[in-house]
Image (cartoon, rainbow, N blue to C red; front, side, top):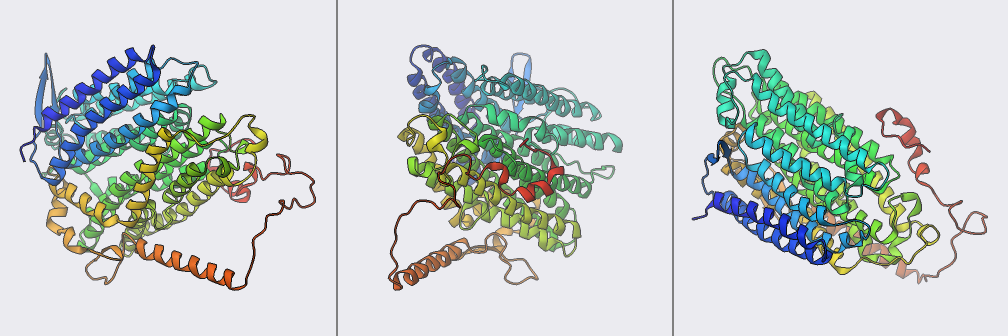
Amino acid sequence: MNVNIYGNLFTAMAILLASAVISSVVAGSRRKLAGWINFLMVTVAAIFLLHISFAVIFKAVPQDSVLITMGPIGIYFLVDSFSAFFIAIVSFMAVMSSFYSIEYMDHYHDYSLRGYYLNLPIFILGMIALLTVDDLTTGFTISWQLMTIASYFLIKFEFREKGVVYGANKYLVLMEIAWALIVGATFFVSGSSMGDSLHSVTLKLGNSSPAFIYVVYGMILVGFGFKAGMFPFGQLWLPDAHSIAPSPISALLSGVMLKTGIYGIMRTFFWMVPHGENVHFDGFFWGVVIASFGVVTLFVGTVQSMKQSDAKRLLAYSSIGQLGYIIFASGSALVLLNSESDYLKLLALVVIVGALYHVINHAVFKGLLFLVSGSILYTTGTKDLNKLGGLIKFMPVSAVIAGIASLSIAGVPPFSGFASKWTIISSTVLAGSEVMFLAIFGIIALFTSAVTLSCYVKFFGMSFTSTGTEWTIGKDIKEVPAMMLIPKVILTLLCIVQGLLPFVYYNVIITVFNNASRSTLTAAFENTKLSEHIFSSMNGVAFSVPGVAGIVSSAAVPAVILVVVLIALALAKMLRDSGDSKEREVPTWLCGYAELNNLNRYPDKSMFSSLKDFLWWTGGNVKK
């Protein structure tokens, strides 16, 4: 397949830069037209980028690192199937957020949209560049700064609101600290210099002292951990930044920007691994460290989410928890790959496939949830769960969408989050027969999934199915415009498809690793031939692990679960109808109260109060 990979890449980047200029100029007088121009140009750029991803992943177009000279500066670029996988996610979600922005941003009558449409395409460009530069110094710095500074101005958009400037400034400072840690790590590599490719840095790591190698990987982990929201670094900036940004930007921050941190962790710990007699890289040790950070992140972030009264802060803390699953899975894979057992090495590949599937799932359902919260804010003017309720009557389409997104993130079958979470959890629990602490971590992750369900029972219940909006919101409440529904409907359909057909995505992810540039993961996939241990059937996907017959690791057959649920509902209806029961509407019984109002409404502080009191030590507590 004759595809000019880097030509298409730079064309897409040029289109994004052009969009920043044209859209921002037009936004001064024609706000909605600026949104359309931005959307169309971002879509054209995304087509180029998705073409690259398709060619590299499915057609196995071979790519080597290339040096691009821009005046005195030389930057290495590498587009392999691993980076192409993340490029596709960023491109798709950028199109969804850009389309949603057309109508949503037009309601900010008191703010100019010039800065928004200037920085949005630059933000997207920075993320794409970060995924394609092949160094940790020159090209990395340019990409990181484009992404960080553009996102800083987007987060700061509502600068007149209380706390927005402070939250944005805090985000900027901490992201610059993260950048300094990553770039600074390369100076501990013996013989390293600015502009070295990752391959060159990896070779030079072998000549560094053991102590310096630990310093290098430690600084890189903390730096990318800041970006990925890893505990405790994510708590310092993520809830503020994600909750104060305009909702389309929150969707990009949570859905895709956090994944650049995940990409960095995986790229360095699975690709930047030196080999040789004098090498002192301890993969098992770093796997334990990363998995430990991951399990703490998923547990603490999710519990903190449950405590929030602000809908967007709830979603933001939840993002920390969901990224914890991916970090936990990455560390577990590193532990298992560095074992002597072929059984554990196969489980390593299963768990890393689950991690990348959760990258896709989280991008879709968390981006969708932030768009839902944007719709709530758009029509009610509030994010306070204690002022919402009953929106299912006024926003029925958004309610259905919110329900599916909530079930997806909670890992309820047959929706998308179930397959990826179950793959991660079941693989680590199975590995516990030889690595006990992974089984304990897997059990914690399983319990945390139940806490996630409680978060979204609260989010959905207090927004859509309880009462309150009727008397707390003094304006007409109605469904959002069709242009804001379309991207949400598309993402909702993906939540269903990804839940029912996980084997399609698993096969794609396996192809990604088979065609990726050389790494410890690529070699393991080639040696193990994981695809031979995966079979598809009407029941979904199962991983056949040698020596353990009939293990269903990815799926516990989501399609079958759906059928069982539908049969149960049909039987329940038959039983109800057989008794000739009739429905009638009566006023809500108020336990003796004469009138339903905010004084006798179930408040946020009362939901799961005993569990929140028991887990007060996890932080994120909201004053009652």
